[in-house]
Amino acid sequence: MEHKEEKFWSPYKAGIMLGLVLLASFLLLGKGLGASGGAARLGAFALHAVAPEHVEANPYLAGMFTGGKNPLDHFLVFLGIGVFLGGIVSSFAAGRLRPRVVRGPRIGIPGRLALAMLGGTIMGMAARMARGCTSGQAMSGGAMMSVGAWVFMLAIFVGGYAMAYFVRRQWT
Image (tube, rainbow, N blue to C red; front, side):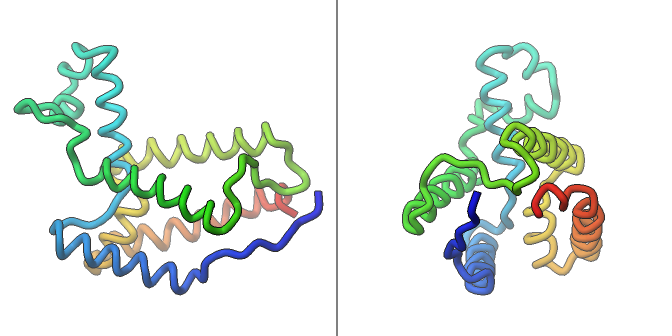
């Protein structure tokens, strides 16, 4: 498989744009950005459709329905939808809108998908246990100069570099 260099957005411009979106979120909504809250609300809504008694017996999940509220009526749900649609539009605009699995030469598609699923599952479970995801903690907490957010981000980078030692051979 021959590697073709693809054109991506400048990470500096994208970072500045993301910072402006975060600033707008604080100014307009009085809240920062995050992703796991929207995913949790989608999960609660879906679970309520098949097992409403279970959701109503769970204080965490039931809180999303208190007072006749719809858990999907929350800005984080719309943020997630916007991120998904924005990714499709961006991919289309860059000419990369096609099904494929990006992987290194030493790992097959099933192995790549398994690692991605494992990593995503671990991050998702950890985000809910920590009551927030890496994007909310790092961006929103970091923007508010929270010491805990900065320590958390340092730990994420150290952990990422440490784990890279074990999986980098899959990419080279």
